[in-house]
Image (tube, rainbow, N blue to C red; front, side):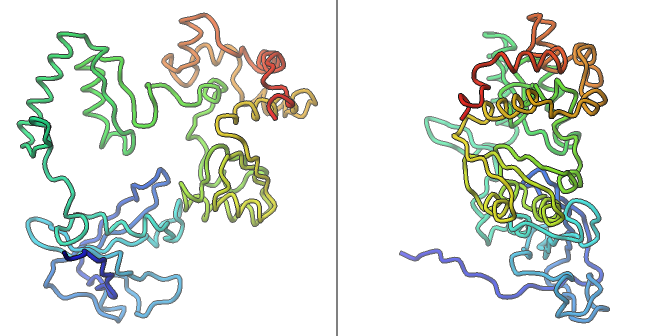
Length: 365
């Protein structure tokens, strides 16, 4: 029995001057680092070592921070029915996000994801699979769509719209979400619809949204220019590497304080501690209690920034009206449906917080 050993390549071709050049973004996380794709036919002349002979326009070997091509950044794919070389490298022209063309280990291997029947991607699904007599069986797209439509029609007729759930991705927005959103909300008209990371189509941070802030409001520059950055429930080095290396680490080097509230002592947390940051090593699921207790201590001592709260945090009227968010935001729905929610502005939140026994620091500890 032969063993399918991995044989690493020890070289990669350089793209020629006339290679097709496309731009793309890494799809491993939400940071969206920029990359350039160089594509040219297999059998055509590759780029040379001189600046006048390759698409990068530089002499090779290149300098430390110049462009180069690792073997793992090259693949052979099919384009217009013919085999083409594909090189995917960080975009050195970027001025935001992965500034000057940095990349994570994941993003640096984007070329390896491209379908190549002679590589590890040969086992990728190329047709829908339908379970027939207990066996997943390849099926044409037309047949698979007809089956899905028939099952869907049966569910709608027998059980109603609420029984027909639609769950989809949320990234790239119009490109990926327009058709399926219209399908679910206009044509099926089901309330059982949401995006990939939530159990229902609501914000995952209703209290934050209630105060008037968009979860994705901060720019990446904000992550490195804050006086103090508090990170809860994640390690950006492991989940958003370039955000950490390009923005948070320079901020720490310039004196930014970091507090990490996380039950895992991971690589990024270790770096934060090494640089003088604070790690609150909580039990899983107890972070809400700790945050509430911290907020209580701040408010009891009058350490809150009253002027900032007055200027930027929603008033009761702004939250109740759905001001700037529309009337389908979660806090507004709670108040109009049940007539209550946890806050009516800052003072009411302070009263509510002080009345919760679980936010007593001794209890939270």
